[in-house]
Image (cartoon, rainbow, N blue to C red; front, side, top):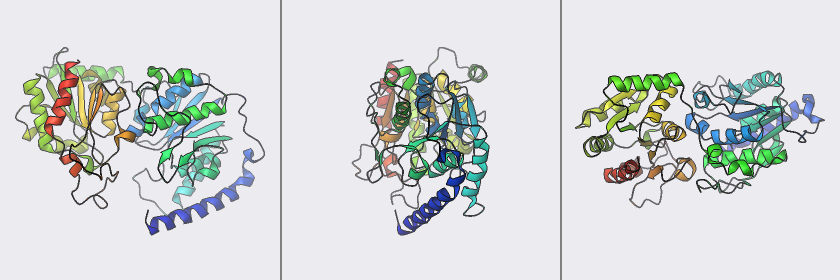
Length: 421
């Protein structure tokens, strides 16, 4: 963190402290201790992130639903991530909020986030939530919002700028970046406790502990702790109809390649994806589908031009649901560290994830490691993973850790996974 960032954080901290003191006299819970003797009737959960991060929250939502069957659970999410919870019975309501810092709209003025928090808190206050969980560890704005909304029980991670706005805090070591959750390891997948999905589960587990509810029996159930997404019936019909029109039989093997990502430094090479597509068609007699959104149309066309085979070209203009339905229909999905690949995991299809600058310990596939595999460069790079996703701060080689992944590495994993199908 540079000097400018430190100064900005200090100024924001002072302002938040002043805002908290100014708002406190008018809030009801000031003189009313939170009631933890019985589960909350109305629970608000916050997650401001985009699609992949929302999917990683679904195991925690499932845990809360099973442990609190009579509680009304409302998810406060950005409009950019709401599709992740479509058809999810673990939440009763989805409320959209243009979270500052996550919306791409420019700030009107420096005080805009605080004014927006006041505006949204008045709306939330009318709903009478008894408890709130802030699922993003550094989301101080969300902690502030629940404080101003007069929600008696406010639970989150112990992040410095959020600390004073919360009533219950899961410990966090800011210097090392490691949480100290009471839930150290999940028995199902044996994945690290710092994985994003595990952290969400840890916070849900911690929440239930405050209400004296034992969540251990639920945590042993893989059906509860896995990521989930449920494609709508009409989306499944749409995908089957289109594949049928393209001459793809119901029993034919289909492999989807999703080559896009939200960050340029997480992209693999056009030549690499084209070679994988050709090998799939020639060696494994599979139908290959190149899939991506409207913003990835140029990338898809470049891969198609480079291919010797003739892969199908699927632009997912129909939205998140149709992409999920496509993944559910196929035998394997290959791609990068991206929301769509987490979606493939959530619908239960085997996946191959190419990782470069991001850390798979935190953002890797949340699922059975025999079905969801990670491929990384075999070049010894002490800087990898660096976590840097923009060229201004990125390494001088610009995504070298991804560009050095070999086609043979990917095809070796392809063979292992397709043999099991």
